[in-house]
Image 1 (tube, rainbow, N blue to C red):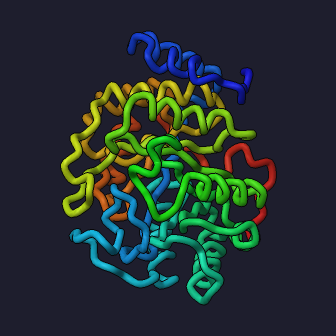
Image 2 (image 1 turned 120 degrees about the vertical axis):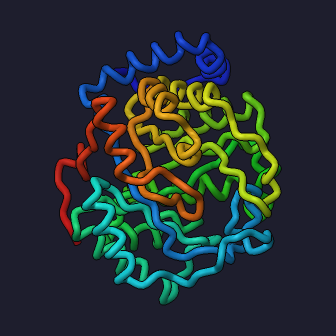
Length: 326
């Protein structure tokens, strides 16, 4: 399977705009070149520090400047994180993602506590992913040394549309953090959100940014906006299933080795719609009742879907030749 990093906007546009059934079929063929196409990575996402964020991301109910139902909560205790990790593992998750509503990581006692959480969860045999905002190379290295496996930092949308969604940091800040993550040899998790009011061209440009990176992100989350009352995007309409299918299928074709995650918005999808997403190349989901602060299908429901569709959960640290706990 040829991995390309020189995709042109025109090539991606042609793929994205091809007849939908043809697009899904082509993506399914690419996906089936991977002998493990029926494996789906099951991740669980918890908010270890909720609300009170200084950023102005238009979609996020955790921004301090918006009036939403999200209550500000301090950093979660190590004991609670371990309990949540144990539940996630018992329910079939192979990765635990820990999110904190911070603008950036700071070298303080809270970060030291996060490093302890990372180490403990890693020792349980789970892949640990963190999403803590912007961070330096030195901080990324500390996470790596503690046993962190992956770092999530989405680019959200196209560089052209970025300032319409967020003004408290710029697109280059995102790319700088991703470079620090890659330099520290952490697995890169980076995708975006559809339904922000962007155009198809913005979606195509976002995919172009991801697919022309020196190394493709190891994991590419495709999120559908969950509009939350009190945020500037509260009245945005839910994106239609064809948009999600085009995003997933195009990502699968142009980044054939990446894990493509069907992320936020899955709670509003029927089983048949989710099945089409798996057919189009999605091979990762978040499971558990919440994604940070928004609803998500529970584990039992997802395992019933897996059984019906013939999917199997992917094991932790797959394709990692040698994993050593810290």
